[in-house]
Every structure is written in C-alpha cells, then in structure tokens.
Image (cartoon, rainbow, N blue to C red; front, side):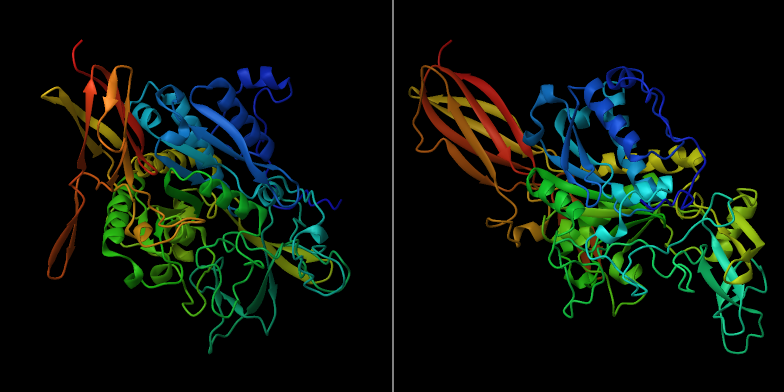
Length: 589
C-alpha cells in the first residue's frame, strides 16, 4: 500500500489516555481532551465510552459502513430512557465530518454528545432536553477521507474507489498527489516564477497572491500545491487520490441539475454509502423533526436553497428559519445567509444534491448547515456577513497569532521544477481552528446553538384531563397541547409534500383512550385524529405592508364518553411531537 505519511501530517499528540490497555479498563479511565483532533479509532473509543458509562442516556449503533475501509458510521442516540423510549420523543439529527478536510464538524458533534450526557442532572436545560427529546449524533460520516487527512496515511488503494479518476490517463489512479517534500510537517503551496504565470504577489504584502491583471508588470508566478512528480511523467500533482463522488452532492433533494452536469453526483441519489447511511437512518426515524450538519469555515449559518431563489420559500417556513437562526446568531456570533443568493459565486452552476435541501424539501424539517469557525473573528448577531479577504486573514495571523499560522516562502530546489518557494497557511489555521482554542471558540457556542435548535421541535402533551359525570355516564375531556416552538407538522413544506412510501410527510396528532377494568367505552372510536397543533410562543413576520403571525394557538380539545368505574388512560401521539399520556379515575372510588 502506498504510504503518504507526510500528507497533511500533524505532529500534535493523537492518543487518548488508556488506549493501550484493555477496552473495558480503558473506557473506565478514559480522559477525553478537547484541545486536539480525534482519529477514527479515538472517535470510536469515545462513542463506546459514552454508551457504556451512561447506559441510561446513550446508545450506540452503526448506521452503515464507509466506502473504502468498511468503517462503521456510528450514531449515538441520546435521551433519558427512564422518561420514554427514544422513538417516542421528538428527535433531532446532528452530523459532522461530511468533508475529509473539515475536522471541526466531527469534533463539535462528538463534543455535543459528550457534553449532554456528562452534564445531565447538573444543567437544567440539558436535563430537560434529554428528559423530553432525543438527539441522534453521527459524529463522522467520511471517516475514510478524514483519516487520510489527519494521519497522512493513504490506507486504501485509490484505484478501488467508486468512479476512480485517472487524471493523466496513464492507467493508474491517485499515484501523484500532494506531499510534504521539504519535511516541515505541512503540505503548503509552491510558488514558481514564470513569465506566463497567472499570479502576482500583492504590492502591499508579498505573502498574498493575487490574480494577474492587464497592466501588471510582474514578476509573475504559477501556484501549485506542494508535491513532486511521483509517477515520472513530468507532471506534478496531476493525479491525486480522489473518488468520483463529491460528498454532499448525492442527496435526494433536487439531486441533479437539468443537464446532469453536477460533479460527483453519482449515478443515482444516495448511491454513496456514507450518504445512503444518512438517508436510511433519517427515514427510519420519522420522529426526527430537525437537522443540522456541521461544516467549515466561514462563521455563518446557512439555510436552503442551494439552487432555488428565496421566492420558493413559504412565508411561514422562512419566518421560523429566521427566528431560530437569529437565536443561533446570538449564541455563536455567526452570520446567517441563504446558500444560493449569498454563498454561490457562479449562479449558473449552483450546487445540487445537497443535504441541506434534502432535509427541508424531502424530510420536511428545519435544516441548517453551520459553517463553523471564522479565522478573522465572528461578525456578531446583527452584522451583515462577508467572506473574509486574504488581507484580513493575514492581519489576524500577524496581530492575534504572532504570525505562526502562515509560513513565509522558503527557497527549495525542486527535482523537476527547479528553484521555487514553498510557503502558505498551515493546516490548523484558516480552515480548521488551532486545537488549543477550539473548545472555547467553536465547540461550546455551536453545542449551545444545536441544543437550542433541537429544543424547538414540537412537544405534544396531554395537558389536562377532566371527567364530567352526567346521568351515570362520564365525559372524559382531554386538552392536548404542543409545548414546542414549532408546529407538529414542523414546516409548511411538509404539509404539501409526499413522504417516502406514503402520503403527506406530516402525520396529524392522534389521541387515544384506553379503558381499564370496570370501564366501558361508549364512544364509537377510541382513537381520534386531532389534526395538527401550532407551536408557541407565536412568531411574527414583518413585511412591507404589515405583518403576519404564525403559531400561538397551541391546544386542541378531544372527548370520549364512558360508563362504569375505574381508570382510563389518554395518550397523545405525534410523529414529530412525541407521545405523552395521563391517567384519571372515573366513577366511584
């Protein structure tokens, strides 16, 4: 197997305390650090530890296997099992590690799981959440790619990946990719003087490269990722080890554009095993009423759509999206934008097959992609988001981090390209936060936003039960409420969409009465369809000529007639809002 030990290498320690001893003993003494990035083995160790150390709060299962190494794609199911089964509570799906080089999403997902189970009973917000709701955490989807980026070891044959790409058409795959050729532990950038080059050093700061413009006097440069000619064909880095799939372009929601030109989309939706594992898991858990996927690195909360204008949004759904995101902004200090309008440079070639759109359009729930970490600092809860400039990034490197994140160009005698310079941003800087500040600046605020977002799901309750006796018969009156912020159908999109293998996505609330010994049901039906119940408190959308209020009317009444004496149980059941029941005695004691 080809060794790429130098590729994306990081010399910080990558071992958890106790990994060398037996599994049971190691997990009992496991020290979990949040000032480092975890390998797949360590993620597995932490996930198993949480499930074993907190059996009443955490369960662990594999949602599928990764494409190349057949690694388990773990999912942690978090809830207080003493207050109900996971599937009987409103659910929320959280994932990280979609892209190989975006390590922080995986860390935040794992950190959130750890924080909730270790702070249950200590923090009221955490305790109430786990008592009433279920969180499903998939901490790392692309374990194969991320392991290569974290360890520098290419531990699979690039020729065996789905749809391998032979860029240089030499019959081999992935044999000539980036590498650390000067031995400094980083894969940086090579700058080669070339009169035909398309780049020029900025006159204000020679470390910053800008596109060549008419009238520039030079010197001019070519820019290339650090590496050498591994296959002897005279080209450098022309055949990196890549798969034909593009992560986050294989989801069912608006999977492909009309011309089918979306790169990496696959032959059909959910073909990639990692995507299939996500889709299958979510569809197998219809209680999931919200989703969040963690990415990098812009310091911004993203909402749909990836390839549609905002006019496609029902006003109600956009209102709820904005309200939840605003609270997220107050927690994280991130921006908040729409992908197509504000995050797509070429609107003639937008993204398709994106998880964000699938979650909203097909699953019918409020879904965000959070681009964690902004190197230059967050913009605050009200500011307008912008993409940080190279000048702003370099200024942050110099003033906040003492210049240690950018390696100034150093002369290097390349075996085929001759004299050039190697320099650029180190791995843990702009794209991923330095490990020593990761918990405070990224893990904690994003965990808090996730907890808030997950707590907005509908929550159905049998709030009141009353018995009214008239001429020997008893009328049992139940007040069914939704104590969550979102309605029991979650989105207007869910009301107008069809689910997989069924009708409307949003199933209505149902109330059922069960009579005990000595009690007879007179009403014709024990099961009554209540319909949907709005959330609370109401949210107001202001627009040019007035305003519109959504939510607020969060209760419904239902009744049955029974005779006799004994106990009856009334249960309210909602696919997204969970199940809840109360008992009451009717007739004499």
